[in-house]
Length: 119
Image (cartoon, rainbow, N blue to C red; front, top):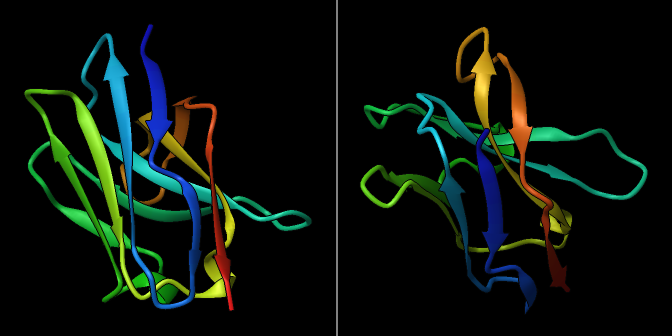
């Protein structure tokens, strides 16, 4: 069973940057992803990456966020630049996708890390 632990969240002003990390222990799955959920909204898929490094992004973060992974360290990253207040949410790391990285259902989840962007 894989265990995922996120870190790197915090509070920044609009235009600032944050880097999220997700440390995975246990089996290394092909697909890893970042999701986010703001209060009163549905969870949305922010970025995905497969074991070869192919990525997929939510339209609203393209050009601002970069997902990467270190397979040797079984760590997933999300570099977030030019942050906007609408990026405020709890960000979750996920792995073990059923049905493909970009559109599949993820089985294993971290506990989440809060990102707050002030105007």
